[in-house]
Length: 210
Ligand SMILES: [Mg+2]
Ligand SMILES: [Zn+2]
Image (cartoon, rainbow, N blue to C red; front, side, top):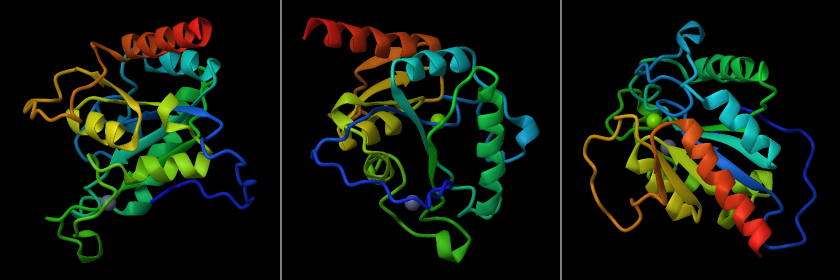
């Protein structure tokens, strides 16, 4: 599922690898304070360090793409259409810092949902990588030069399965710490600013060092 639709068809890439690098971003608990199942734009608050951190990543050429599980749709807590206002509010809060998000992908499903058309097992709910893979195709992204930043290990797993490097912003959201070879983040940060610094440090050391 994807909120922004483009009418213009993009030229097909000549190279197999994407042209752009991206930071894929979990939403709740990573970009904004986690108010469970909230879609009220007035209750959306950026986490500390997010606006400036995203600005620095954007300035280094990263596309910024949100990838979010939104099982509240399947659970009947809110309509899929109400996610549009959430994304608009997020864009609005970030515009003050000159940040533009390239896109917003979400999974509305959950196998135990109550709304029949969304109550199913799917390939797009993190820790599965389908939304990241789709975003990479849509935006011509080279996943091997890209990152996934999230606040739980399912985010790290989805990022790794898609072929990205990953950062866990450990703000206390992860409580189970289920281990697995794909679930070990490349870096654990205490806040978003630290995550952005880690990506930029890696970026500039690999582009300078060859
Ligand atoms: Mg989260
Ligand atoms: Zn899904």
